[in-house]
Image 1 (cartoon, rainbow, N blue to C red):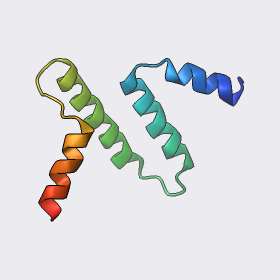
Image 2 (cartoon, rainbow, N blue to C red):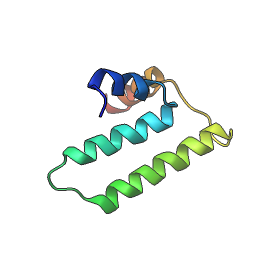
Image 3 (cartoon, one colour):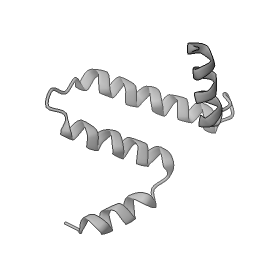
Image 4 (spheres, rainbow, N blue to C red):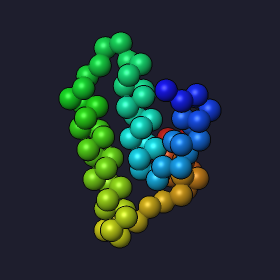
Length: 75
C-alpha cells in the first residue's frame, strides 16, 4: 500500500468525474449506517448528468452563478 501522499497524488491525476466517484466511495466507507441503494442511485444519477454535460446535451453553470441564484430565491 502506498503512502497517503502518493495515493493523493495519483488521485489528483484522475479525471474530474472519476475523482468524484472516488470521493463518494470513500465517504460511503465512513458511513456507519449505509443506505447503499440510495447511494448507488445518486452515483448513477451523477454519472448520467456528467455524460449529458460531456455530450453537450445540457449546459453547465458556474458554481458562483448557482449560489447567487439560490441566494436570490431564498431572500
